[in-house]
Length: 191
View 1 (cartoon, one colour):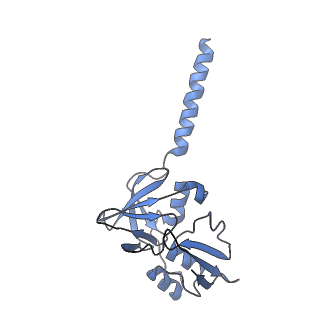
View 2 (view 1 turned 180 degrees about the horizontal axis):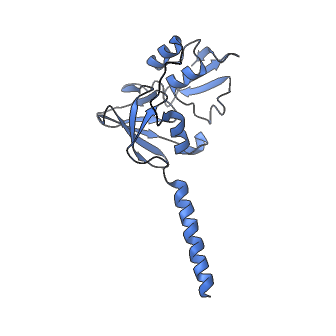
C-alpha cells in the first residue's frame, strides 16, 4: 500500500512538472530581442500602447509603428500576451496574442517576429525598404518586404505563407488582402 502511494505521488509530481514545463515561457524576463517585423501599435492615452497578433495596420488615432530592427526588452509574458519596452524603456507595449487563432504557442510566435540577434533589412530591395518604412504593402514588394512592413499574418485567415493572398486587419472592423503574383511580388492590395 505504501509503495503504491509513493508511486502515485511520484506520478503526480512528474505530471505536474511536465505541465509546468509546457506552460513556462522560453524567454527569460527582461530578455533583449530585436523586431524582425514592424509592430503596429495604438495608444489612446499616455502610457502603455497596445498591439495584436491581428496586426492592426491602421488602427486609427495614436497609431505608432515600432520599426523592424528595433531593440526591445520582453518584460512579461503570459499565455495570452507579452509586454515589451523599447527606446531604453521609455515606451511600453502590451502585445495581445490568441493561440487558437495563430495555431502556435506564444514562444513560437515570438521567434517569428523577433530575433535574439540584431536584424538588418539591407537584403531587401529599395521598394521593400520604402514599404517597411511606411508600414504599408506596395505593388511590387516581395513577401519578405510585406512581412517586415505589416507583420506576420494571422494564421486563421492566412494558413500558409505560400498562399497567393495574405489577409491583414487595418483595424477591428476592416481588413486588407495583399495578393501576390507567381514570382512572389505584390500585384494588388485590396480593401
